[in-house]
Image 1 (cartoon, rainbow, N blue to C red):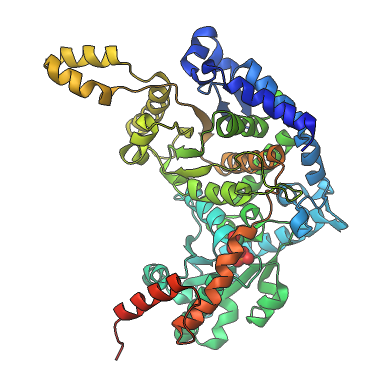
Image 2 (image 1 turned 120 degrees about the vertical axis):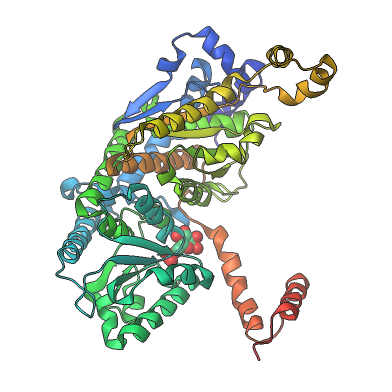
Length: 545
Ligand SMILES: O=P(O)(O)OC[C@H]1O[C@H](O)[C@H](O)[C@@H](O)[C@@H]1O
């Protein structure tokens, strides 16, 4: 790593040595206009960074770090279609998926914009013909349900978005089958009528074990109910692997493709998003893409100090590397965003969970934090205890939505009040004096107060950022997800790692092969721990006879 970069890191971490770097309350005392000064806007989204300990000095040091590590130069290389995913020798062009047809974006030698819009055209025709009843099931009945079979990036993004945008306007019911655990299929199956179900097999590689196993299960279910001849009317594939989709028996006209320059976790905007378009209608899917494109334009053109993805990434760097906080919670105060934490877990942890730099050297500092989350207010009644009083602060992303899509104004006020209160409680805390006064006022004996007081104190000064959406509509959701995608890009550049490969998922897949053979009656597994547990499993398995 160059001396300039090391010096920039040193400048950031030096600032964190000052106890003031942990005193968020003092930042508000020092600057009465802090709330507005640290609030930024783009594409209808509001990003409030005021409840972190960032100040002018730390922001300046972080911006210098972004400069030294060439974050924007790498961003521009990505936009030019260079093969910045070096370990897989691939371009990273998810921005092309939501750019207009005349954007002229290239992935190496390929006209990426043309490829994308060819597929979008096919998807739109398919979706509109299906909604118009021109494409039906084999019995002539209209489709009422779409089942997306896929896992990881071929499941989480579409499932998250379909749930987030679901409402009375839905054109089809969308179901998502990911886990190879057939309990998942058995839970979905009773809700489906094969004659009215369209099945999408979503897999970038079309080799993923779980997806192919589920695809065979569901194909057999369709064939049993409707006959083999009905299958072409009920199946479609979303994949980069046209040979494998043909081998599976999917007609070429029912294959919606994309390219290897779309990473799985960034693919909900591609053919992988077909379930969203089928459930929501084409116009709403197009608005989702527009929202993401608007955030792309902001990311590409806004100056560093106003660039939301960069600011969010620098905040994370401050928390992870300067303040040494190894986790982060994502709390959407909107039940419809309940699957957002799961989607972000893949986008962030699969991208940033790396131990070596681009040049293959061990990283010098922490990379991606552990991300977890849950919809508020539910989260408040489970893990928030640790976030309020555990010894290691957990930075929180609060995601609030100003306008609900229901008529229950009182419920929405309560939801917002809780989200705002959590952020305030983390910041202001409650000191011993205030707790004692409150307990005395409640008539509690001094002896009892002394015993319980330490347990009731909140240190405060716990960081959070708040992202506010005007409404959870397709445009805002697109912008929100793209904001996180670009934050991840910036962090990859800051840390000098490849955020676009995922070699870490391979070993377990490989080892599952021989273990599966052992479960099928072959030679026992080589490793004694696996062999011993397999023996325990075998002993507990009921004899089917
Ligand atoms: O879309 P597929 O090729 O079936 O891949 C599905 C998922 O599995 C892999 O193991 C990767 O970890 C994910 O990045 C990917 O999204």
